[in-house]
Every structure is written in C-alpha cells, then in structure tokens.
Length: 434
Ligand SMILES: NC(=O)c1ccc[n+]([C@@H]2O[C@H](COP(=O)([O-])OP(=O)(O)OC[C@H]3O[C@@H](n4cnc5c(N)ncnc54)[C@H](O)[C@@H]3O)[C@@H](O)[C@H]2O)c1
Image 1 (tube, rainbow, N blue to C red):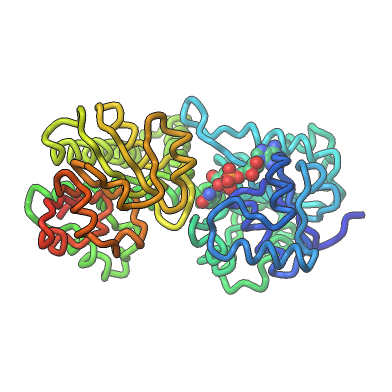
Image 2: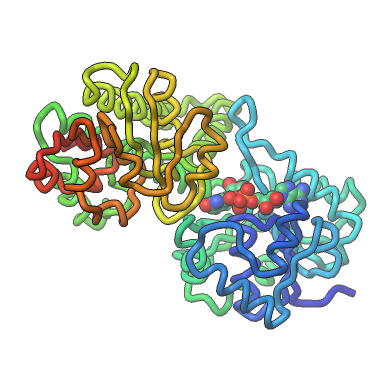
C-alpha cells in the first residue's frame, strides 16, 4: 500500500523544486525525482541550482526534517506516493505546438509502479486534452484501469517570487472529472488562503494558456502604445500609471520594454496559436501579440544602432542585464540575449554584465564578452544599453560610467533609469516610449 499523504514531484526545476519544497514546508512527505543525476546529488546536499528567493531555506528545512528527499528518476519517486505531480518541461516543438514527449515518457515510466488510489497531477503547462492523454498512456503502460486518478493543476508561479507565489497563490485551479479525486488534490492545499477552483480538465488547461496569453497581450499592448508615444511625444510611463489606477486595468504587466521572453510566454503563445490553428480558428489577436513582440527587438536594435552613429559595424556596446527579467538567473528565451546576438551579427563588439547569469550567457552566445563588473562593461563603449531591469543598476555611479565610455549614449530598453538625471550628467538618453 502507498504511504498516504506522500507526494512525488517529478522534475526538480523551477516549478518542481518549488512545488516539492513548499509541499514539504506544508507538512507533506515529499520525494522529488529528477533524471539529472548531478542535480539530484547537489539537491540532496541542499545546493539549489537556481536563483529563487527563499527556496534554499525551504530546501534546507525540508532535508533537515526529512520531509523532503531527492531521488534519481521518476519511477523511484512515484513508487511510494499517493500523489504524483508532473513538473517536467513542455518545450516548444518544431511546429509551434507544445512538445509533450517528456510528459509522455514520464507517464509510461511511472505507470507500472503506481498503486491503486494514486493520483497523477499534471502541473506542467500542457495543451488542452493532455490530462486525458496522460490517463490513456498510464493505462496502456500498465496502470490498472480505473484505479488511478488523473488531474490537471496548472502552476501560475513567477520566477523570482516562486516560493511566495506558491504559498500565497491568487487561486488554485484543479481540473478533474471525478469529484473525489478533485477533493483529495484540493486538500493538499488546505493550509493556503486561496480560492480553489475545480473545473473540468480542459478548462483548467485552458485557464493556464489563456492567463499567459493575456499577460503577453498586456505587454505587447503597452509596447505598441509606447511606440505610438514616441511619435506623439507622450511618456508611456505616465500613460501606464494613469491606466493602472483603473482597477479594471491594473498596474501589472504594463511596463514597456524589449518584449516578453522567458521559458513560458513565448512558447505558450505559440502553443495556443497552434491549438487555434488545429481547430481552424484564426486567432488574429494573438498572432499580432507575437508579431509586436518580435518587432520590439528590431526597435531596440535600431535605437542602439542609431545611438552608435547609425551603424553597429565596429561599435562597442555595453550591455547591462542578460536574464529575461530581473531577480532570476533564467536565460531561456531572454530578449536581452536575442538583442545581444543581433548586435554581434551587426558587427558590434558587445561587452556585457549581468548580476546572476553572465558566465552562462557567455557559453550560450558566441562572441559575447562577459565581465564581472558593470563599470568594466562600459570601457570605451559607444553606447550603454540596459536590457534587464536589475534594481542594482539604477544606483551606480553614472559619472564613473560616463567616464569609462567613449561617448555618453544610453539606450534604456527597460525604462529603468531617470532620463532627467541622465541628461543632467550629459548622457544622450533614449528609453522606450518616452
Ligand atoms: N518556469 C516557470 O516560471 C513556470 C511557471 C509555470 C509553469 N511552468 C511549466 O512547468 C513545467 C516545468 O517548467 P520548469 O521551468 O520548472 O522547467 P525546468 O527546465 O526548470 O525543470 C524541469 C526539470 O525536469 C527534469 N526532467 C526532465 N526530464 C525528466 C524526466 N524524464 N524525468 C524526471 N525529470 C526530468 C529536468 O532535469 C529539470 O530539472 C513546464 O511545462 C513549464 O511550462 C513553468
């Protein structure tokens, strides 16, 4: 018989590790299974490989209390669990659709070791219909038909505040046809103060995609407004503030910049577009969201080229920030990396600084010169560009910055700096939409 109230989490990445550590913190017995042996070894020693506030402490507490363990492989984790949470990657496939192969592999791997009464809960972001697919794969791979529950429980955490988002969620969504299974899953969250929404599986899966697509829409919308602001001499920061006070709109995700990125929005927008295509729905609005986002990179590169004297060839560009947003070390689909690549392709020398992920960025982008100090990045630079909104960059000594540069040009793709203060220090300043 399984150990009741024990949880297996498959995948020890941003979502899986947060889920595992938070469930252990809530008092559950948790075993986290990953197929990366090195990761399992370091996590077992309490070494957390990602930058995530509060997570190292929770992992340390979990290990010390023995409520949290790490093992190699999905089957090893699932064999004693009542609940098995799938938190594995669902990357973008070649045709834009979500690639479900890892979810499918894991379902086949765990099927033979599941016990009657176990519940498999999908936390990975998966296309509509995946809960049913997992159920079918489990049965085909040897799970006893009718004895295993399957539910969708999409995750809404944000990197950088993952622990807080998990423990103080705005809502918990559980998609499941069987009421008894939904109630059991909801009980895992009983100590959190959050509305719990039980829906059918398809709706739960759609809630996740619709939420990310909507947030991406907000970002593209404010970027489009920013581009208009530049032509009509309005300041998008003032505009966003004035809009945000309206509770129907809100302040969040109204920051003009280089476009959305990261491991979720780009792939989830593409996956939803693929879903729309597959049912012959022309999701014109979402296609525009994607197009605006792509063009935003072009606009930032054009601003940098203009500041460098209308050509990137031979220019030296200082880049501050490489992660897809501040307070994370995640470089996946980072607009900053995409823009740095474009600068290099245009013939510029790019010297970059990032507080969290510089060394890894240097391994990913050929030709990128990464330094360990923001001032060093500016030596002999023709243009300094801010590509990630790290707060520490705001408070640097800009006299010293300017003193290092060949010419005092700033392209602030995150609207992080104060234009008036920069102009007072003799910088030629260009932001986004101001
Ligand atoms: N990162 C986010 O902010 C976020 C937020 C909400 C939802 N999601 C979704 O959650 C899912 C996971 O995302 P993530 O960012 O945590 O990914 P991640 O890449 O950080 O972590 C995935 C982990 O799964 C492990 N893994 C891969 N194949 C495995 C296998 N066969 N068996 C066991 N472990 C395996 C990897 O080694 C890795 O540790 C994705 O579907 C993503 O879209 C992510």
